[in-house]
Length: 467
Ligand SMILES: [Fe+2]
View 1 (cartoon, protein in one colour):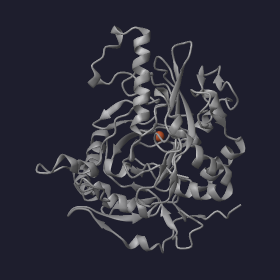
View 2 (cartoon, rainbow, N blue to C red):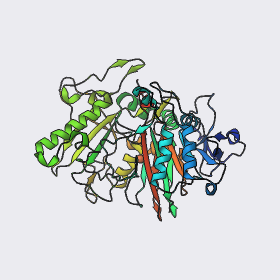
View 3 (cartoon, rainbow, N blue to C red):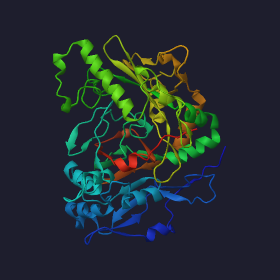
View 4 (cartoon, rainbow, N blue to C red):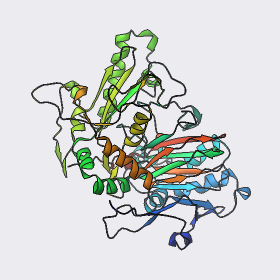
């Protein structure tokens, strides 16, 4: 077992403490220390790697009582990316890269979802009137959900409730939509009301997770690199309140018709509705460059610069309709991607939370169905290559992952996590390609809202690992 290169912070001699960020004439941010911060090396095996403080905590030098929301919104603009067709890192990205992918802004005078929305739009950057449309590539734009399994409600422009699952329900570690082709590059949470107890947001660096798992369970990581991962997501027909995966499959943000499609579901028969859903599932797979196995098979052994893609590429997405009209969607993804700026492999997936749900509901063994919840909670699995002789893929061709590997991944996640504590007005900004997040249960009036963003120039560089 490799030593755990994590120690508690704060380290008051941290050189970064002396660095201040003059964001605007009114507001200067300075690094601050919080007990939950960690000191760690992202890659232990690299002798040139320095210890970092994870995450960075930034506070305005002036107290929130002496600042207005408008002043911090103006200051946030200095962190934003510049318009460009090509990728150019923002100041925010540089800070995130230096601190494991997360920045926790504290001491902000933000009171509600509208002010948080304005803060995030300032961080997103703006396109000048004379700029070309292609220059939007480097700006942050609203993330539009597809294949969404959780219930969220809009609160303000590009701000929605975080997962509305009940307070006693913890959420395991995951990259936001790391089980799909379609995921945001930046996610941010804002605390409108803190919990009385619990309710932390544990975060963990995906590069560090890859590094530790590669050295302690190389068989597990090697198999993900060759095969990828399969996540089976159950989507009910109608919305299920009180569930962490209760979104209706026919919602526009799941697999139903989008507003632009202008299709009235009531005018379709059952077969037509299913066809529409199936097309949207396939469209989601194609968006990530997946082969279309339902349309005649792809090429899993596609050679490219640096090697071959895994079995996930050929198997793509598939589905099973269930007797009650609900659907299980089989989403096969790489599971490990090369981080765009740090150029190192990142454990980018939802193994942590899908395994935790499956274990919690007693669903680790087939048929993975919870009588109590009336829902499916299968653990992640490995895609198998298509049988070239036998023709079409079947869902049974996915292979179970040994539970001891999943347990080891869970243990490493816990060892490396920083448990972010919340105060009113806090904003946590996360590079989704570098950091997984989770949620602990709470008591009290905790209210967190979320904002998801895409930076096209950055997402395009988040390539799957090749073997
Ligand atoms: Fe999430």
